[in-house]
Length: 140
Image 1 (cartoon, helix red, strand yellow):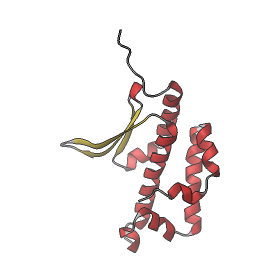
Image 2: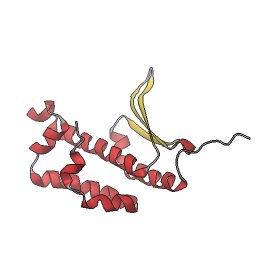
Image 3: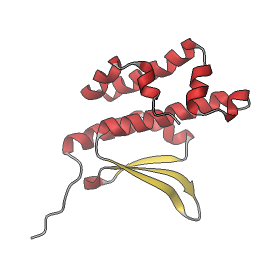
Image 4: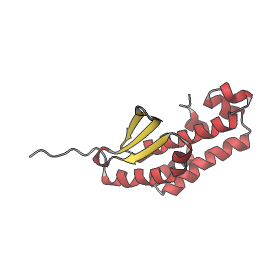
């Protein structure tokens, strides 16, 4: 008899749901939705168009990847909001971040820690010791 393959563990399903719940505010402000796709993991749907549906879909089977992706989405949204209507508007995310006062940069990085603590997931809490700029290395 054919056995259906499962791509995500039960533990990661629980952890991914915690991450999804923590970033719920993001779904209200962005064209973005994260759904539990059962045995396939969690799917992030983005850039909705009435005629064609969602433009992109990303699958996540581990909570760390999902957390990092959603935190970057949250950060991008914050940076774009700050840059809107200013000379920073045409800058890339990393340059916008560098133009911010050190205190504002720290606030953003502290928010990442806050999100991690809200999930209660141990491996995310351990990441708090990373160097702050390491978290931004892959910003476009």
